Amino acid sequence: MSNETNLEVVQSTTIPAILSRFQSDLLTHREAAAYLGVTPETLAVWASTRRYPLRFVKIGRLAKYRKSDLDTFINSRTISCGYRNSENEIA
Image 1 (cartoon, rainbow, N blue to C red):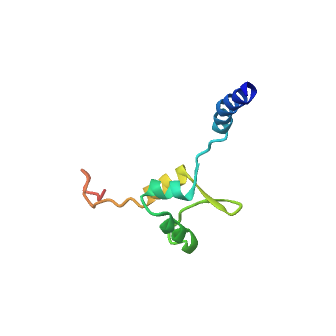
Image 2 (image 1 turned 180 degrees about the vertical axis):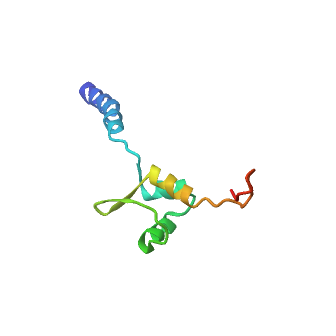
Image 3 (image 1 turned 90 degrees about the horizontal axis):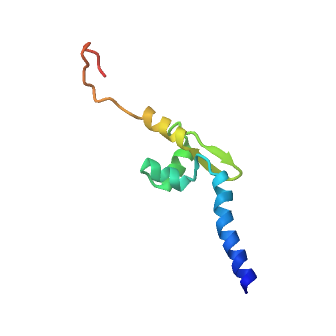
């Protein structure tokens, strides 16, 4: 029994350390949808219809989203409210 207990302790402390080395900025479709504030279904429709130029990475059958691409998408969708700046230009 003591060997099994020690084995469990070793596994529970080494696995998170191993996984942390492989963390990336790639988000699942659920994480990306939550980040954008839409449902995963909406994100799937956007991807399949190419409604928006939202980039994703295909890994086998999975679609992963880079956080930087999501930020770029958000920035591209930003609309100014039409106020004029000090040079009388619409900002």
